[in-house]
Image (cartoon, rainbow, N blue to C red; front, side, top):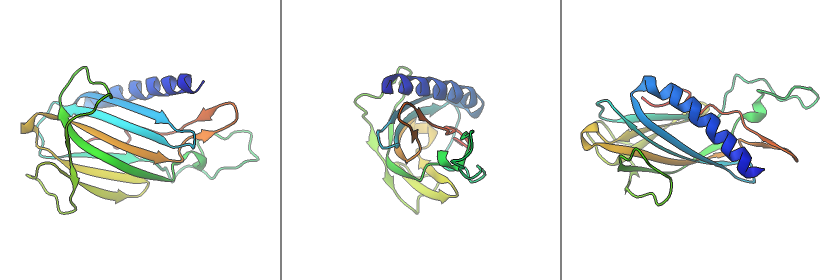
Length: 178
């Protein structure tokens, strides 16, 4: 059942992602999301763009403060604040070779380092911006290097786990990649 749920979520997320990405200059976007037994999701993303840039911004929103408060007495639980993640943990950002047949096994590439003073023209660094309900990553790899991006993070406590089913309400590319 856990594998079936993972496959269903992956298929829904991938379909949604490809629909949005085509308008953003993204050539390919792959995502691997693994639900943990504690309600966390470990997310891996791989993408590359078909436009010129000095840096890329990837915004990950994990909480929607416009959702109504959870009411356990209601017959309808959908789209309430119970579906918000409690936090995000960035695990790594890498630059990797472009591969149209990319898979998430044996990730190679250059591990980038965090630099709060990073700016346009830098290479191999990223900056974290803390925003309401998420984080935004400014990744400094100019397009002239012809590289793809790999990001790995954990969304904390985002899956609502019941005895017989687990549910998730999370928009992967809301305010996505710029």
